[in-house]
Image 1 (tube, rainbow, N blue to C red):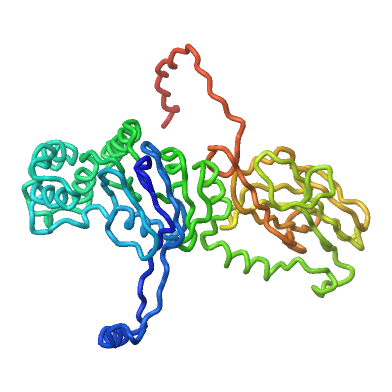
Image 2 (cartoon, rainbow, N blue to C red):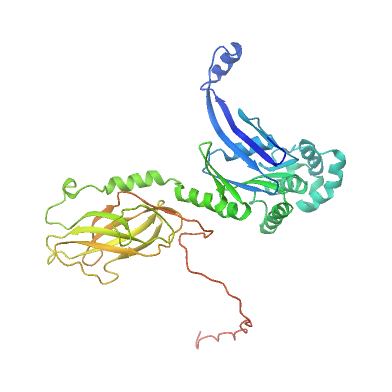
Length: 423
């Protein structure tokens, strides 16, 4: 490890001992380690970092991925079980705000207590205390016991203590829900001041937008191990593509109801209209694909059969749904006055310049009656459509939006609308 980096880590890991029953812990202690009554749970494993001064790293991942554990190790709150790390310079952490307060001490006394735990001398704290008090905006409450504070007041004081000191490395864990909108803006401005002053920042948040805006690089953790590290836009878009909050169970339920199996195995009557198959291809080719990037052109081909077209006319709809069942877009032959003639055919839906942003999308194909109301069948694609994105756009779609500035006067005040006669 070298001093040219503000923060380094080599194969960093953290394991916790898990005892099935309390007696196992006692037995292990009495046997002086000869009896092993626990198993190890690795909350973190194989983390390599090398952050230069002024670098900013964002952490993303699902709950339980190891983000907070990594922050606790880097801030010195807990010791690593494997590997090593080094922080060159003074470190301040914004983890569980207010967790280190003594409830019977006043806010002023807790400033000293927390500052000493951060490694500051009493003389340094005396210089910083007025600025901390001013930032926290607690007024006379600063000399009241912390147990009399509301939760918001405690968070204000915790943020003010950690943010007012002048660390070389700042470690932040999801703290932008502190206080009202005005105070949140103060917190964000203070973080940006650290960034402009070439301080090193490690930031954890479930908001991928915040990670992109605050950080140059990002680390995606999954089950305690690094999944991807690199440019924050690239990594957060990759994570968004794979993000699956309660999606798997929903998908399995949907696919179990509408399995993409041959018609002969579904027991459908021979004279009933049916969808035989449906696949996704790159536009104008026979290359089947289910992984694309925003802006790619694709087409969806649907093979259908209708033994009695003169008796049972049909319509076909194709829908794009996010994994949580949010309807994103859809199109139907009855919306575009497309007539499905004959007893069989292949319907092609073209999607040039796909505007969907990063994510996993289910694409059900729905077979309707001639009025587009009754559903004869719902057919699921063999695979989801996986869209990757490499831009900073947020939301579901990338729209063609552009700003421009004009020299326009604001609209004049409108005359009040008069009441209707007899009102």
